[in-house]
Image (tube, rainbow, N blue to C red; front, top):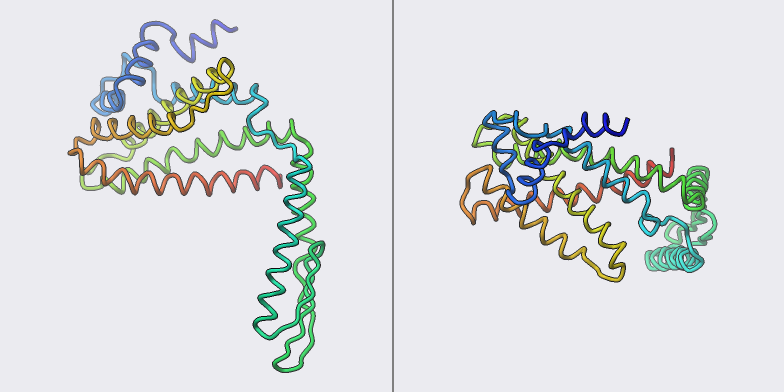
Length: 270
């Protein structure tokens, strides 16, 4: 079964080794060859991505230092302090605006007396919803192992969704080249495959050198690789590629952050 899996997934002959070599040391070359129809000698992009992402998330899953969701006492104390500070800030803001406010950090109900017209009223927040969210996140944090597994599963799906989004960004920024969207999608798949390989190598190195922080170097390597790949595939000058890469990277990272927060919320709520 193992042999069949690797044979069907990798074609672990010279095809896979050649694909891996070009992916690592020749940025953009695999995408370029795919776009001009030279595909028989290389592993198909989707198959390559599926295997590499499987390897990466497997390494993340067995590394218990990553995504450790168990809330410590310090974390709980900090959260309580933030809630208290928020209550004080709201109270001070309302006092400055001519209102007297009673805010209980443990409840979302606000009692407001407007001193400008003498009217007294109660404004209740959505207490049921607030309690529901608090309970869900409490369960998510306390059920560490199951929560990690759920978050990893949803995160892998999130990255699969982000690939066509990144391809669409490339389509918009290089729309004058009149390339087919699939060509941009192949670039996105190969780039994300490279990123997962680099992160997998870092995870393996952390077992040997746990005290060494490599994240800064990883970020630099990914930026340089992306820049070279863009020049290889889209055939633009150094500066035109550089000034296109900045907004592409900015939009992608903002989207990645938003998607990650959304994935975290979905993982806690489901």
